[in-house]
Image (cartoon, rainbow, N blue to C red; front, side):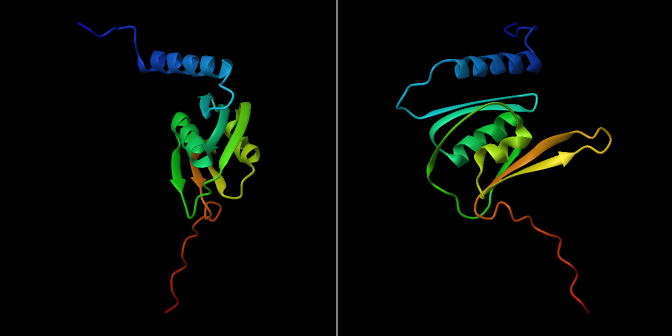
Length: 136
């Protein structure tokens, strides 16, 4: 048997989170593009240099288990951001961009919230409203 019985999805996730944390702790090269993202228990740490916002937010959504959607035109400019141990709900404050939205879902039984999707683009802040039936 080549499978290690001690390896589970949980231990693999812990190992990946530890490796990501170590990557953030190391000093990044001064003039090269950098993208390091760690998401653990609803808290996000990001170190990005010379990256498109779409690449950074796609990495955050991927590591947080959220959906990612683009709506409208994307801004191609490069950004630099360094955020440590920020609750994921506060990500729109850190990015401070009009073309970024974070959809959250509230659990009415527990009162807690969790991120569902990251929206990016010129139409990201416009949510589709249900259409009223046409008058007869």
